[in-house]
Length: 141
Image 1 (cartoon, rainbow, N blue to C red):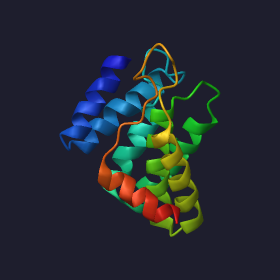
Image 2 (tube, rainbow, N blue to C red; image 1 turned 180 degrees about the vertical axis):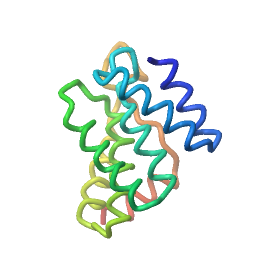
Image 3 (cartoon, rainbow, N blue to C red; image 1 turned 60 degrees about the horizontal axis):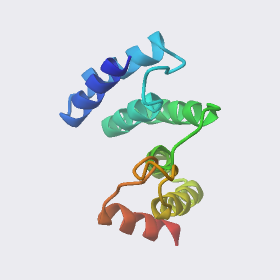
Image 4 (spheres, rainbow, N blue to C red; image 1 turned 90 degrees about the vertical axis):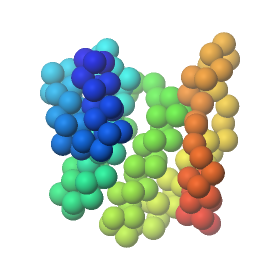
């Protein structure tokens, strides 16, 4: 399953949204437990759907994000950060300033936290850029 997930990520980075959706959807339907994946396929698919920008895609992205958050597996800060960024995009679409604010505050906290595993300095570490941090700071006020 990680192969399909990887191909979905490659397709998304190349701008091949429909191809990316197909790969991610295949992972979710053939391996709903997400065993053998990064565990973030729902977030990846939601990000691609948000890039499409159609109202129906944004609504489905929200369902995927809620589904991922309801999973009981451990969540790394770096993946939670991605979730909050996607959740902000959904909130922006619906004009939900309260959710955008709350997710921005949490995303900033995650960005400021260190690695989650002391012996693995990059695990859970949030990697972002200055423009994202500026946007989050603006939304958090």
